[in-house]
Image (cartoon, rainbow, N blue to C red; front, side, top):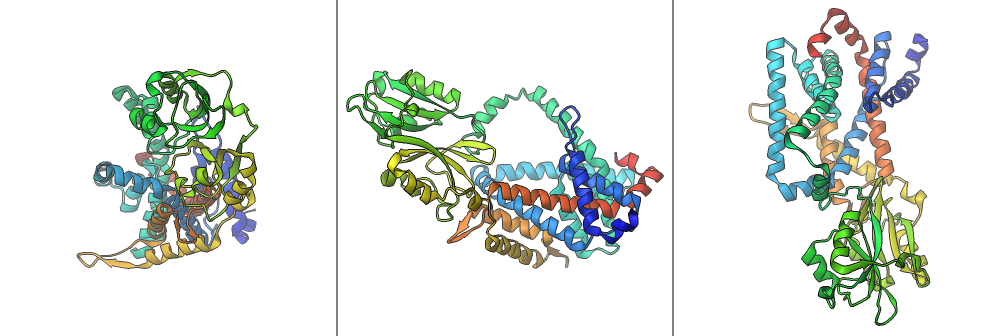
Length: 464
């Protein structure tokens, strides 16, 4: 069996990946290793036979896929957070990293760990796979005896990782008690800035509060800061249905559909009037409610307001489902390929709207190989550039840093002219997991023999 696997490294790779993924799905009291189990299974196979090898290009490919897709996903939130909180967030992150580094240095000094092992402990205790990848890339750039250093690094990571998981769980529980954290209140604050799953619902309200008669929706939203979207309204005076817009005025006994969370809808109902027993959503004589996929590249990366749907088609987007997250469709929401949008529109306009957005699940799942390859290529070129630091030190971002930085920038840009940088949600998740699996499997297979030596000599206990 061993000789067969040695002769077929790709079979070995996917054998390790499959078993590791299966082990990662095992949970004890709701907690499991997840994809990181691939590393542990790889170590087990590597310990079985030190001659097991997987081509270096597999490791590099996994690393690049992993960090680039992380950059694409994190780019928008990263730059948005930086614009809002700026140096406060950076200062907090640097403080936490510095404190962790000091702890790692103390362990290195007093417990006699070598440098790579200490770095591995630093990465593993924070369960940070990207930092492990960056450390490996740094070793590959300018260290002698690379294989031994990488093996020590992986051993430190492997034995500290379980305690990193348990430590974080215990710390969270402790902080919950000390600071009396209210997760619902935190979620309500974050919902204004980040796309959180909002458990959206809708209500039809009848306007009975004379204090809002004659006021526009723009004025009411500004005065009360409601986090809702208004859909259709039925004018009591004129007896007709219409799509709401910023300047829509409310009058006595008008009916209006409101979309939002239950809490927000309660606030709106308290101000506008009462719940109407006849929901406008069931009235589909003139308007209909449809869900379609965003697959047309022409609308990807554009804000909802820039499409002028109300003026062109008497249509209004109320909700967007992105991956597992359903969120309100605001005027400044930027559409991404693969989004599933819910809108209300006149029946005769439905074919034109479906054509505008594409509405093709197949097209929404495809990768734009040109933009994907170009983005990774730019990242690799950036990683190859050398920066000379004081003291004659030469720094390169490498295969980890270059694609990550470019991914962050391109993820925030979303598109440049006709080039769409973002990937469909499902595609991004798949490539990210594939990259991490390849990365961890190769690391485990390479370092299994060293792990057995550490176990036999008792070196693992101080690390753990």
